[in-house]
Amino acid sequence: MTAMPLRMDLKPEVQAFFDPVTNTISYIVKDPASASCAIVDSVMDIDYAAGRITPDHADALIRAVRDRGLTLEWIIETHVHADHLSAAPYIQQQLGGKVGIGANIRIVQDTFGKIFNEGTEFQRDGSQFDRLFQDGDTYRIGTLEALALHTPGHTPACMTHVIGDAAFVGDTLFMPDGGSARADFPGGDARTLYRSIRRVLSLPDETRLFMCHDYGPNGREIRWETTVAEQKAHNIHVHEGVTEDEFVRLREARDATLAMPRLIIPALQVNMRAGDLPPADDTGKRFLKVPINSL
Image (cartoon, rainbow, N blue to C red; front, side, top):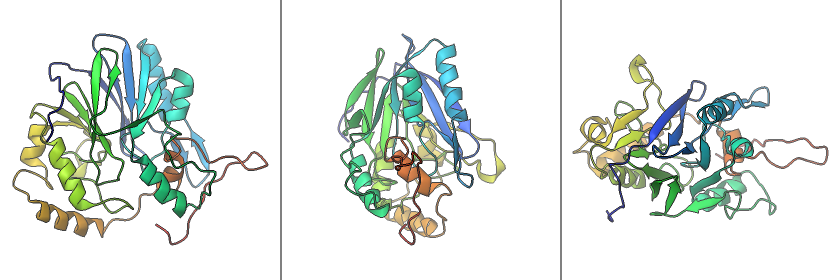
């Protein structure tokens, strides 16, 4: 792996917010030397059956930023989520900051723009976001320098964000007893995912890894933080000694048994727009589409 500008001596303050409806963990990541912070993988609440969207989870993040007197610099999306809606535009309206995602969002937009028959008015150039990260790009959160690593496989646009001694892995990895995320969505690939995981696990052993999801396997309490060393020793899918071919066989067999995420239809339509809803019709109402036999 290409040498990376890592600063393991810098330890960002990480505050986690667990959403029990979608099993998503959002984070406020604070520069220990200033009031600057970033929010990673925010959640907007949706009652899909009722067609109702509310900002309860996002409001908790906003309150925490304000109560701590922080300045929001970045709203980071590790990828286009298929299991929850992003609250990025709502948070940006309240707190400012720039919304960033991997540059391959353009591939995702092209793929799902066709599936949802979005037409030519839907921009597929990533312009809905403030920053499109290429592999190896850096950005600042106060005095902290953050590094964006392209870690595709779950989706083409997945990024891992390394901030000091902490890495936010999105859906590339789960906790050691949870293994890895699925790789069967359009644009996903199990072999690519294995290589991305190995890239993450080439970070220093003491690197803190923060998950985007946890499902409490076997009834254990919800957890979201582990280390590279723990993953290499104990991850049930990719511990040391598991070959690429073994992982691909395991991952593809497991993916064949999985149902589609409950919120994939609304989530993709919203998240590929950086968290915005589809445009309103002539009456001012907004709608989400349900493509038939297309996913």
